[in-house]
Length: 399
Image (spheres, helix red, strand yellow):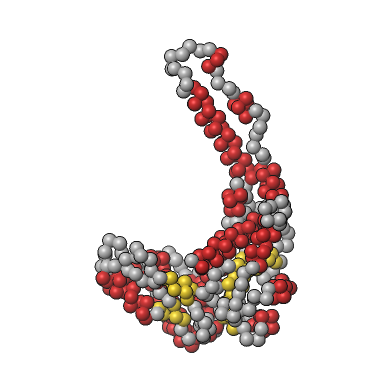
């Protein structure tokens, strides 16, 4: 019940399942009872099994409202082995996230999670995470995406956390509010625009049903970053020699090109390659050329790759690309050595850029509770799910 409530929170669902379980248990008992008598036994009162009412003895599972009330009461109760409630335990878990001078963190707002709250005036939830471990260290329901809504909370974070000393901030509206962030976190703070947000603002305007979608997408990515030469050479060698696939398939140049223009490249090859983001002027020039190359192209069915907003949005991003390049003298990847069973023996690279991890957390956060709860229960489920996310993220990073 406790583990399922975090992502479902539907009392009626649990009530029905408990009733069903009770009925199945009665059916199993009935079959066991009946199996002890021969098939040709004459009917007799002694052979009559107990009724369902006699079996349950008047006891029935709780109704949905009681299930939600019991969960909330248990979550906020201090009657635990460690002397404080699960709510306090999860708050301490989130407050315990450490951010050092070599770490980058990201700030962003998400909107889907607000549907879990029956709370008038709540428009978005502010979130913040650290790039090295992908742990979330701040959550807040806000009435708007204005930074004034969270300034007081961020000031308290700085006062109560002596281990909070970041050097780089990734923010989706960079370069806006740079002076505010530096006033808050220090004059030496480096404010950057995340690669994730730069690309997705353009990609989201493309027609994904167009046959040119993958070709245009790969070309756009080449305009913004390149792969590390050593990593790419190792991957291409593995593909051509047949050690990349379990079946020993040897890829030709055309097959490698087809692989790069598919989802399998992102799923299987991207983790093996470090991305090196190009300089701002180089990106701006490459995006301008990308617009010229694809703005008027159509596929075999006459569908254009660009929608009416693509060219406008792409040109807007050329004004912001100088804030996309990775900060100097900062470790951007963690190396994960290949396992003993790996055929290609190529290491994986875990990115320390925080914004993509925060977006993945937003997807997870939207499914916590997943129904219109009261604020008390929604807080319990949201904090509990976030604390569980942090524990898993920190454990994965340590391993």
